[in-house]
Length: 312
Image (cartoon, rainbow, N blue to C red; front, top):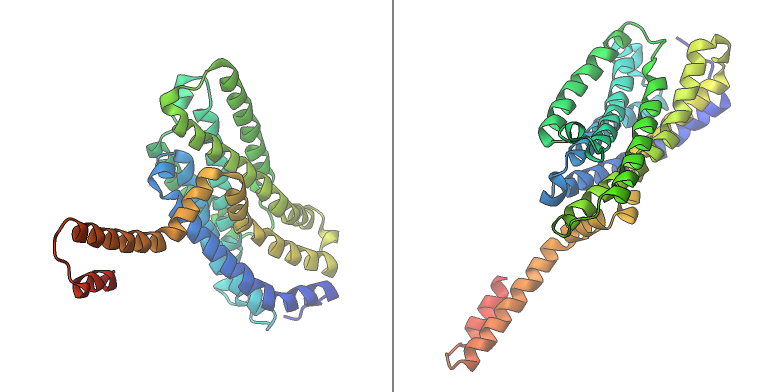
């Protein structure tokens, strides 16, 4: 097949050679760090962290599929032209972002339940419910997008996902305000309340960023679906540009988490400095122990003290 490539499409393909490797590296590094931080005992005790981890995993999988595809497009290496690729490409193109978006919806619902005044709703905010929701949600995404292997023209879920996130986000904020008014913080739960509050803030930031980066592609896609006259070379090029824009959704939240959440920031710095900090503490302890031993009257040779410091 021959394609009528617009100037915009050609420029998007040319810049993909340089942009996609950067997006790949940033997504991998930030999401791996994000998974390691959220697996900390303090953050892992919250069900919301499990949804964030699942979102990071979906982001990594989507990047591993999308970045090579976008880069190879410049060299006219389109695996969608193969008999297998033409079926799997639309499936993977939508199932992975859908799964990531679903994790944000589930996290929003979890924050809504945990901040509710209803005991029944609060009982649904548990790690067990989160794990089952992630498993069942992933299977549901696969089943929902399975027809994309045969039909590539319609995806109604794109219109519902941002609306669901916005609704649960607003309800969560309302519940939190009501709790602040009606319930006084208990001294023993200050740390847990602080962590939960910052996770809710991280979620609101994540949803806002997700809408900024995902909606442009969704709007263009819906235009191409319902308005066949919009499938011009320029609009197709714009759609490809918005795919690249959407990929920023997979690494930008990491930096916003670091700036907005002190708990997340402390965990990050502690993880990055842990090895260096442990080495310094060990060396300082060995030198102090040798000093105290000498002053207690025990005989410690210079060779033994040097040997202890070198072993560290």
